[in-house]
Length: 204
Image (cartoon, rainbow, N blue to C red; front, side, top):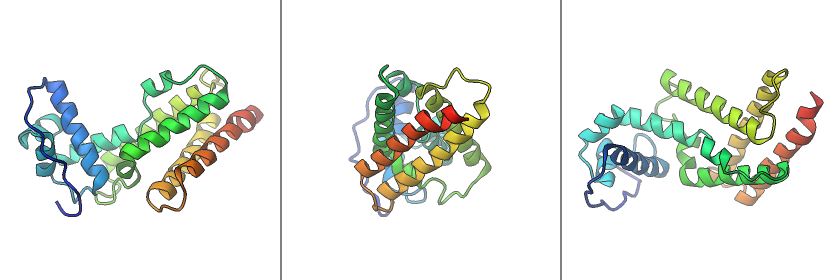
């Protein structure tokens, strides 16, 4: 692998299958965050996880399957994150949700933001991204207190899809182009979401 610092190889540990799979996933997530798909090999991932290369195929099919799994997890807002949000005013929930989003990007954002540069927009990648966006939008709708609205659901989804594009663009300016700081992106996303919640959706 070129251009990517490989983590120190850990000692082999006795883990159950789920723990072993998670270990491989976390090592791959870090390596793909540090380098592109082409720069990271299955051998690199196996070495970082302290496992035989064959286990990558056993758990994920191949390097591509593992990469797609990393993209899926990195680009989806988790239900546990939503459940952990405070039950206070919407402004407080919005601030915490944006903080969670930016925290998750700091851990795996380069993978998510630069996905597919080497693979192209393949059908399996496209399917994962569409599903991840739809799931995240539904959770965001719940977070903002609109989970019970059904009559104008499609319009609400459309509004949040537009917001999702803004969030991705802001993240790219911060993490990839380095034109904005994290506090600036946080302020942009939090204030924009507050306008959507307080003014835009109530007016539809």
